[in-house]
Length: 123
Image (cartoon, rainbow, N blue to C red; front, side, top):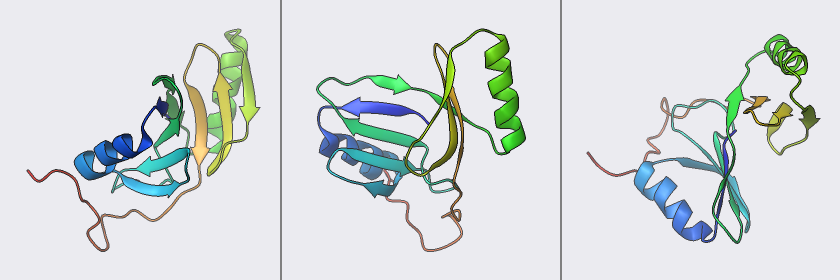
């Protein structure tokens, strides 16, 4: 999933949660995991504390193990360095250099069918 760094997590949290309307799935003093109201996965964006802001990586989701294996073989054939990595709240995750990572996340119930959680900017 996309991963970005921020010098000020409190300001980033306020922007993504209070203005944009993302939901916090989990957080600690150095990391915030966010997802949209209609998303069934644990997170779709990770914000991490760092000295300088940057987009660390862009990600794509694969919903089946078969699709993930196909992606791995594709990148191997293309000669791009790839490796399996462990990331919190994610299933098998494939990182590929010079390319977006492929992963499959643990699923969660979608949130738009229950109690209203959206707290973003009013229209």
